[in-house]
Length: 163
Image (cartoon, rainbow, N blue to C red; front, top):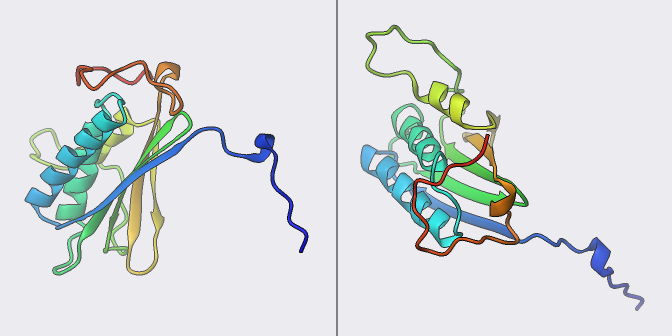
């Protein structure tokens, strides 16, 4: 049998980091999504903000608008190269997210406006039926690349992504 080995130039240099967890579609599950994301970002030695706010909004939307009794939502974080991708998958593919501009006196309806303002890119895609994936991407500054991070676990959570 003839086997070839790919040379070093064909191998991926940057590590791919990922984290995924299933959570209940409740306010408690949404809060837990944010807390777990913060801990995962800390373990990867990445800045917390604005990723924590984006996770909070997407998870809250999954628990509020994507809720189907008995079905969980999934939070997934990926770091590939200089990009952090946040995905929240719920089981309501019939309810796609869209930006709204609520009345000033409205008490809700601004979550995706925040995501739009904080993320470099965001959108939604259909998952395997009956799921949809709402995602947001943040470009990591060069000093926070996936291959090197000068920060230790004692980094303050107030570090910001450059935009």
